[in-house]
Length: 295
Image 1 (cartoon, one colour):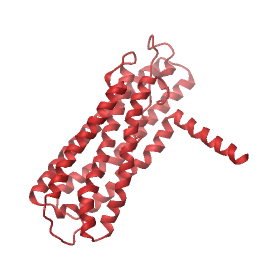
Image 2 (spheres, one colour):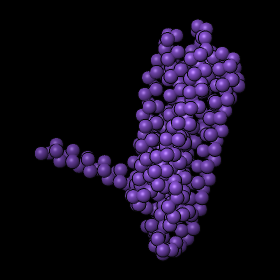
Image 3 (cartoon, helix red, strand yellow):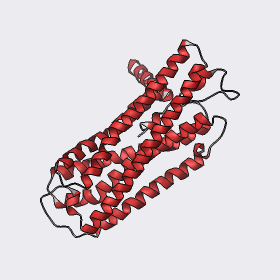
Image 4 (tube, one colour):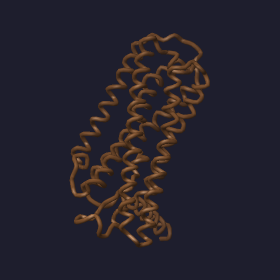
């Protein structure tokens, strides 16, 4: 999940003043200081972990949808679905954390914020996973304590008791609130970043610098659009689905889940676009592979 936001441009300002040499505003996100690079790397690794385990949950989800086996339904609805949503929201939260890390580097380029230290990054990462696992364990324990009635419906909700249904709705309402907070904060962070770029753009006259500024604004817009396309439809449909008995919402829910999973595919692509060091490393490996073939 390198992630959508994980590819946020790394904007730095000169150490002495903001006006001289403002072309430094578009430095590569994977390069500059070891302090920020290390903390971001911690968050990036957690995004990779969440993406990896999310992919591992997909075979269970597919098996659940194509078979009428009650055993498979129990396995997916208890363990598979829980792991799926834990990793989805882990990706969402780490995207926001990385965006906040970049924002602090922009507005406080001369300061070392706690969020930018490796130690704090590790603590935040551990705290994020513990929080998600604690919330999900409430649903998992409640589900395992429920007596199921065998029917022909494929949805996990058909196996919920009244008590479990209440727990399920509360958890998803809380999840929606978390997502809404992340979405608003991401838009705010990108908007403030854009303002900073515009101010810096006014102080430079070179064509190359203007091109870099325009590219940075375009890239930020792409990131916000990708995030919205992947996660906004799912959360809107999911909220309606929980409080409606209309079967059409179930179809829409499955389609929007597909969109959210596509974020896993976009993460490496977006990271490649924004991270020059990553591109250089791939080119280096490609050259080494080509030289080995020739020899």
